[in-house]
Image 1 (cartoon, rainbow, N blue to C red):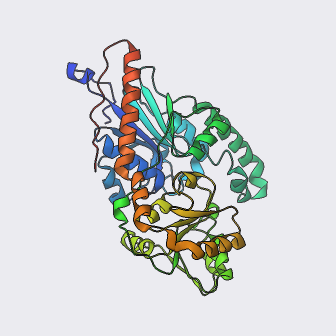
Image 2: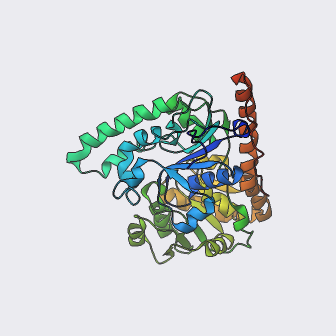
Image 3: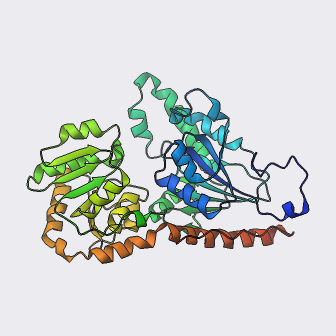
Length: 399
């Protein structure tokens, strides 16, 4: 039973013991947003964990170090394998979580987690990866994959989700954005200002600096918005250059059909091998408009410069001319031209300096920034309560 349950009488020490809840959306794998949740779970090892649905593999769940409390959606048939299909029910599910026994709630949200309902004596801080993309700018792409007879129904559901997303954005006491790009999206979609911009954690220690090489590399999930097709097609115009395109997903077969003989698509590559590929690359390529983009920082941790589409969160991590280069359109010819410009001056990139820049996004730096922000917000909130309040436990800082 979560420690926030208040059915038993509280003892005197319990009244002064900080109760913390960490809330995420669905847990299916440990990618970017889940890395934030994992880092917060390490920072506050006494906190209870909540999610709409928990579909983690046992090894990934063990990394969290404790059980995950889920919503009533967990018991629905296929909810753990087809959780995205239950998106219309997720707002009600997240609102049904009973967090009334907690002093501090920290949500990690790219969809519904920031919509949890808390009491007047609970501080709620939400780390925002993005406003709900399904309901805002990704709506047309989402509808394009829906049979046309179903589109009016799905469009109505997306309209309701967009209204709920904007309404529930007023619930947290403070919003943290993962990039300046997301801070602007929050302002445009929700009409709110963020309290801080804190980049997500990157496990830089898993990516030692390499010596570089002659091949270009990219690594990503093969989904449409990543625009891996643009990178693959660019190398049709660069017959003397070689691209290794790492990852798997629904777009992999299509990209393989587009690839020329100078492009290799090996599919999934284990973490250790990925680090070797990144460290031995001449440059890392990135064509997505991303909320932040962790893979380019992992490449930079290896000392590898990045050639990226200059929109979105990448502007917070790559320094043009120092740690990489930007191109201005998601077009194969534009990418090919950017690579040729890079080849003319790539000797000017200092791999040690690039790795040092990447280290500013390390996991322990994220945890330190979060601890300082949460601590200051809790002190102000506790003072405003006008009564004795528990002290924030000392966070566990690593590194």
